[in-house]
Amino acid sequence: METSARELVSAIPGVQAVNVTMDAEVPKGRGLGDKVSVPGVKNIVAVSSGKGGVGKSTRGGESRRRLALDGARVG
Image (cartoon, rainbow, N blue to C red; front, side):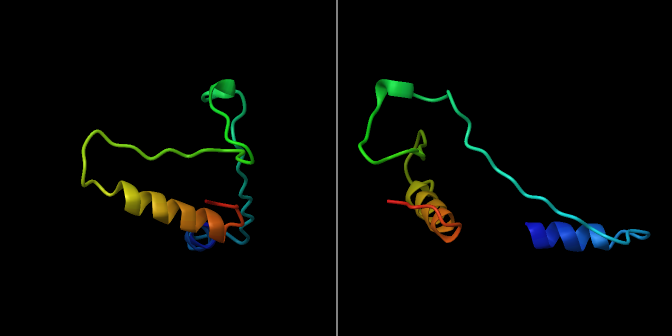
């Protein structure tokens, strides 16, 4: 995303320099709170759907792979 943003903005006529800052923060105080506790687990990401055969396993697996590539510990 950073590379794409840099390339797109650099292509605008007159742009001489591009500075990209990327940041993310996990929101606090939302979700289930103390209702669910899994020892050793800090965050839970749920993937759901109202019908079968829509790619939940594929989407969940791809999400785990991308998070692991970004340095997260996944299970």
